[in-house]
Amino acid sequence: SRFLAKSNRSGLNSLEPSPLDEVTAARCAAQRRENMVVGRLSKVVAPGFKAVAVALLLEYSIICALMSFCAGSATLVCCLLLLLGLMLVGEETLDPVSPNKPWIRALCMISALAALVIGGRNYHATFAPYLVASQGRSYKDVSATATASDHADAGTILFKNGTVLDESKAIGLRLYGHTYCVAPISMRQAAATQPEAGAPGPTVQFWAVGLDCCKQRSSFDCDDAGNADAKGGVALYTPDDGEEALMRQIFAPRVFRAGYFRAIEGATALYGLQSASLPVLVRWTKEPDSMMQGWLVASILVWLVSTLQYSGVLALIWYATNYKSRRARYGRENSGLSSQGLPPF
Image 1: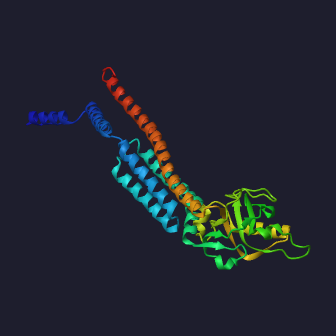
Image 2: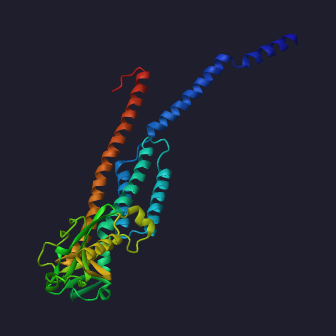
Image 3: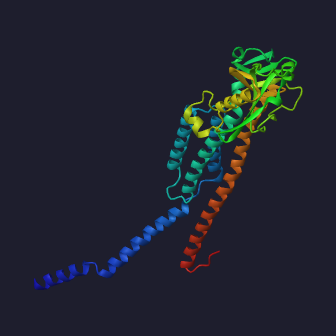
């Protein structure tokens, strides 16, 4: 019995792990975990260039188109929801350990921001003037002495023969970082007639206007002012014409209708003229329809060209980041082969 007890104690002692065995087991477990991580990293494939480029390009194109042709608070909300949906899809589909995931997330944000800014500016600079003019009424054979209130809903106006732009009574007023230019539209005889001293001058119902295209006195080079055959006008659009305050403050250029009215006040005081309380402000042109079509074509070209330019920038950025990730993976593979005593490549 003593022999059996002693043998049992020696057997139990032999089953207890030694410190050396524990260290070896820990190293093996760590090595297995490292092999699993390295194996997963070796299987991580960065999203293909076509898939990511198409997704980001569609994001830019859609948001820029929405802002270019139907800007508004509702459109802004739709664009933000589109951005959120695209980022959620990216979080679910991209591998969490992908080295390109931060770059893709950053490019997604940059694409949306660039599309919002460029689209909003495009809307106010080209498409909104076309939209306002196309929605207004078209008047023909209008006298320069006709009542302005009867043509307040005008989109385009063609004046009678003998209507001229009186550049000698033009004025440019520096306000809000721009020069607001105005010139009275009158009949040829009225423009050549000088009122008597102290007598009230003629009442101007229509004014040709422009931005940063004149000098302070008796100079007006806006649009078709130098064309003797011009006798038409397109209704003026400014961002404060019924635009929502939020959209106007963020995306619209700082151009205000009040600046033109202050310039008109200066012209009436300087040249002894009178002006209608609510005169019609127009862009002076020979062919109003051609000016409107030019705005429409310009808005489409800005959208298309900016999309093409963005695709080129996107290709360069993606190539640079993908090239960096490939070099990093190449370095890991070479280091792994070197640790095994094998030549790199």
